[in-house]
Length: 281
Image (tube, rainbow, N blue to C red; front, side, top):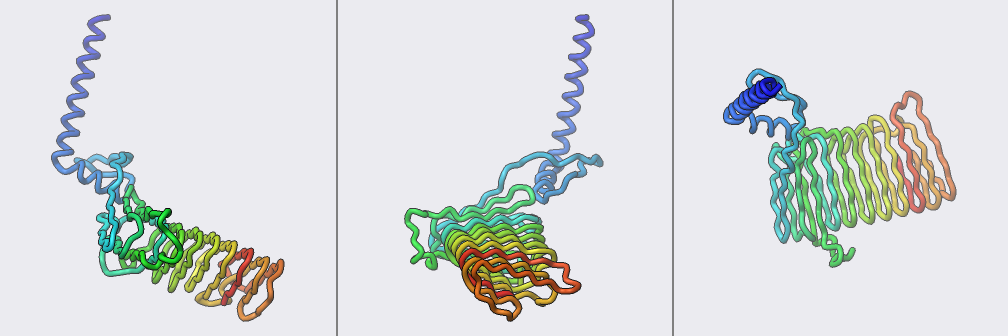
């Protein structure tokens, strides 16, 4: 029995040394760097020395930070990410396209600190504001510009807006999600498959195209949507207090429910407004 145990131990040590040698060889030949690079891009397998291995390792986050009067951040390796998550506390924000390969963040008089992180296929841009020193009167003093590679199409863009203006221009994504506390969001020449908006006390303006559906909820604010072609959509509008303008037909809203369908339309827009005005055309 002792001889059998000794042989098992010896074979275990031999196999361990062989595995360690192969791992070190792969690492020295650039396997580690390749594995990290591929994992950051979000792929599922990697070829090392002719063998396919699943990518399931977590190399942690790549983080970039900036604050103060002038912020200039280039988020390296962000061009391959598929998901973009933005959290803004108290600043005016512009989201634009440019002819580069990675996401850039530029800020002026930034309230608090901007933290940018990459983890797998997700890029997160967060403003950690000094809320205790913030008032609506000085929101415009803090401004942030987010530059996205031209032609980039994200699977999902999510944004949480605290206070300030958030402007999006020429952006395309599979899903766009917005949570607005007390800010104004304006989307110009936008396109997405699905739009999901929750607006507390603010305004939401959308100009562009929606492929599948939109679900917009406004507690206290105004909603304005200019679609690529009004007849391409079916509409379901519910408003408690305010005015509704749906395709040029105006109606004072007081517990109003309007449903408008168009022949051949495959996209659906659903709007619920508690207190505010709705203008869709």
